[in-house]
Image 1 (cartoon, helix red, strand yellow):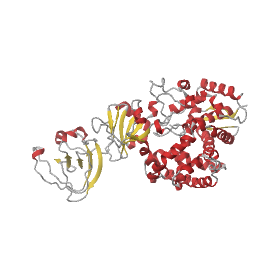
Image 2 (cartoon, helix red, strand yellow):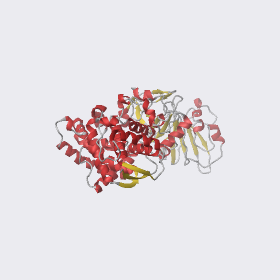
Image 3 (tube, helix red, strand yellow):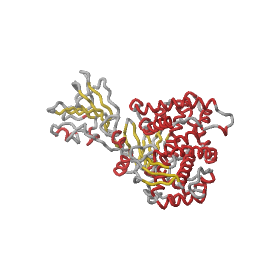
Image 4 (cartoon, helix red, strand yellow):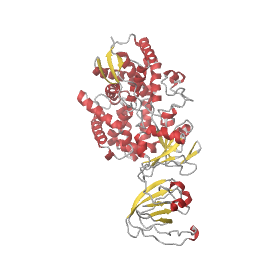
Length: 568
């Protein structure tokens, strides 16, 4: 086995690696030059600056030569060569060999079996000014296995061990996390960070939009959506969405039982899609609608993983993606054929078609818009209902407010206007409190120039990850942070579209979610109609949030079954 260390942090190439073997007892400045011919061996390239293995290769040429200082130790199971830089003290305890924490101790150590297969996650700055770095001995993969297994738990452990700022090396990338409010302002305002570069590859992997087209269209489409879905235009959606929700709630019948998450999906998927994209994108038959829901649910579940790795590793996800893209080819064709000249009559999809450069990409952008409109709103609607139904005093307050606006609950098919929603602020507070408690584990930007965060310098090339999940659990801004307390939102100036300080679920600065006000409205409207029509019996305890996802709203870890029936 060979351990290769390159003092400059650069990968040592397979081809000729010639230089002197440091003779024992001689100073580095006066070493004699010699060459070593090594048999076929595996070799690990270890960067002392990063304190982790960065590359592995096979010395498969009979005349392969290794350079830098070398120390040789005879082993019963074969020769061990430690190839060290000119300054071996920089390696210190990072030599990954049992009993060898320095060059001198390695020389004195007894033969032992290597433990490279043992999990060896490490955390150390690559230079004194960088955040602590968590990696692994596995090249390129780094800490991906531990991190991907349960990202929120991983972040919690890392925060406890390393503090609020730390770096994770995984899948060949460095992700630097900021989990407290210090650094949030720089994240949203610094010109040394770039949002588009952070998400471009994810968009390409998820919906097959190439980089050039993404950069060409992003600014125009963002501005269009921000304008069309802003507070002043919500009235254009409220009536249509109310009718769609009534229609699809009717499919639930007058009574029944099931997982509340499934019930929410059955109603919100087709209702919201028909509102934003026009009637007809969702199949009308129940069997076809079920197929649509299954494909979209699979696409949504693995979206986070698919955005970071090749599609070939996720066959079922890829199948659902292709099914949805094929559906959008037909939808786009219909939208183009029926595209009206009057702006007020256009659907959001038709506005997208008017602004998109590269019409062949319309199905891909349609799928991206579908995911953005459903992926977070549906689970937040679920969590809002869960919290309301689980707190009797809050449920009672909600029902009193509904009665005061619409009369005795149970009236069939109430018409809810934008003005009615303004008269129900407590339900809006419940929605925002659910968003606070189930916010994404991270939102991201790419560091294009080194940036100072707290006492650390985050280098260019890192992905800077701000964590709403942890920022929203800061007792300085949110007393009793783990408690569901809608009344805390009294302090927010929602009439002027202002949130509470340190609430960053929708991002900040010029890259806030363009559909945030529509999302809040659709959830509030759904909760109003659902609670006004049905009464519930809870069959399960409130589920914990799943630790499996870093991006997007946290999903429930277990089912939450309910019995429901129409109010008398």
